[in-house]
Image (cartoon, rainbow, N blue to C red; front, side, top):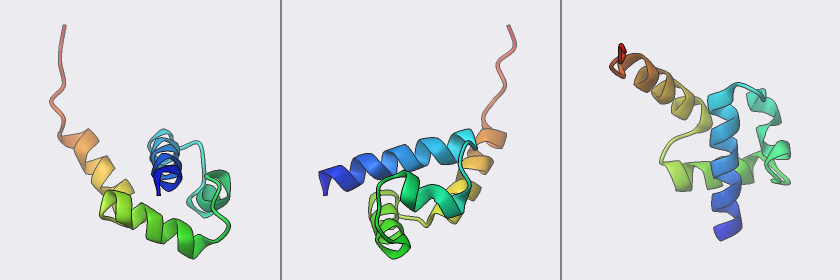
Length: 68
């Protein structure tokens, strides 16, 4: 379970950075199957990778811009 948590955290980094296509995430994060990846991702984040990406985009847009 701990290893899967680290794998999901890595997947979240890849999603935020845009350095990986969603179809490549399970393999790049060390999961043997897509279904195992989705189950672990949902367990850790509470959302599917696609929903997580949408939520992350909204968060970026709603963050206040700091002018210096």
